[in-house]
Image (tube, rainbow, N blue to C red):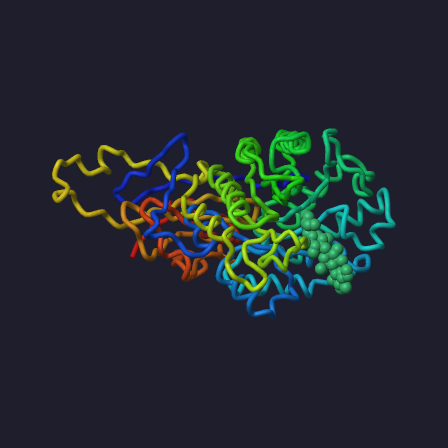
Length: 468
Ligand code: G3I
């Protein structure tokens, strides 16, 4: 069954009388140093992106850890707690307590969640490892249905299938018990996940696919095939585990861009880079800038907080040292985020007519009218029968704004069930969304995003935006 959602991009307005610079269909955003955000999440949000980290449930009680988590990150991935062995230790008997702990922490700190991972050849419970054929296939779909249903409506994107391709130059699928159930196991996994949670973005996730090589090209061909046949896939995750044997290369941006051109979002999902000092900092800068240069690269996740939290701690591959101090790599990542990025052209507001929006040229700068504060809002709607997810982009006009309120009119029968990155007043009819603490301040011409999920039919009227 194909329940691929119908995507509609709605018309947009910019109420500010300012021109947005448009180059090659993408809006170029830049944050001047004076107004640069000071946390990874806020800096990423300035160009409509997220900055996340892998989280271990048992570390949430460590206050150094949780303080950094809640200050810096607006997306979390449970590092191990949503894997098959953790969530279904005995067949058809599910165990969600550790994963639920992370989800509830995230929800109470305005962090979204990347689910990881529904189907993978590793971390299978021993009962699944001993299955094969139709028994394993049924166990896999039952697992996906149960886990995705348990977290329905709470997951931004799911890594539906993880690491299904072989390393090296063959471009082949990896041999595994799941692969031996039939070559269609990946698309069956995606269709099953879509049926269980239609609002979650569904990703394929892998490593050593960051640059252009035989493995990434094999994944690319699979995604192109899925898109052409209507198999539901929304995003591709590039893990980004780098060390001397698997270095950061200059073609990462090109690779992300070629996947994005297939019509999927791309995300850096498990970033860590072995090294230290300026060399490591330079590599972080390169990867962050590669993502920012691709409009559909909508977020970056690092695979842990402090070096000591890493699965390969001796490589010191993360942004904070063992004591929780910011490393040079942190500053490089933050600076790269603050240098701006391109936004998704599919959700870019139209330009205003420069002849009516720009002040006339003047030789005397003292006669130039002051910059006009204001904002505009655009909605991108993911609608399916009975429900929808709306992503709203708020764009500042010709002056920096310090807060915003977006008004949305919902059609009769529609109701909002949850929202993120904004505070909602009302749930049906005329609903208003105000900024939260970390995304009210938006530089001139820059954008931030919030979203909401609802039942019924999503809004079709252009929202209003009021700036403070
Ligand atoms: O929780 C048990 C503990 O009770 C036991 O005493 C201990 C003994 O070794 O093991 C603990 O579980 C370990 C778990 O990490 C939590 O620390 C597992 O053995 C160990 O295999 C597991 O490793 C994880 C690995 O995936 C395998 O699932 C790493 O933390 C995790 O960072 C790593 O993450 C993967 C991504 O999911 C996919 N991409 C690659 C990435 C790095 O390998």
